[in-house]
Length: 189
Image (tube, rainbow, N blue to C red; front, side):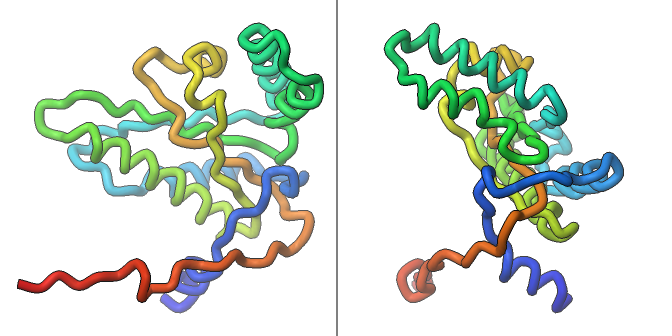
């Protein structure tokens, strides 16, 4: 139990541009995705799925999104276009966690969305547990319907997060965490 609490206590995001090769092996990635899928899921709907972006597909996705950005914003700077083109290549691999939340007769949509968020967190924790770094990002492509279509999402699907995974290039310091006195209240009658 102490190991689990140590992992939870020490987990931190590593910037995507500091997550180099080597990335996880196929077996390690399968293990991470299996762990990611072990989240609360009212009704056993699995209201999420994964899109793995690895290898040359990372650069191709970046190029396609840069082209879309140029089409959407003809005056966009070359610097921003170059950054977009490199966005998915900066880490060893990226997993898009896709929320498939929708109306259901018994299961509130909000609970389905929260389940997709829990998948993102579990994936990040699994990466950390196997010695990799991870960063959960979104960005404009997560919200733009044409970008989501490039990723192969259906119109009703949303990106819960792009989880960048790789070998950390350096040890990153922890950020300040909230003071419990400022975020905890106790209800009383």
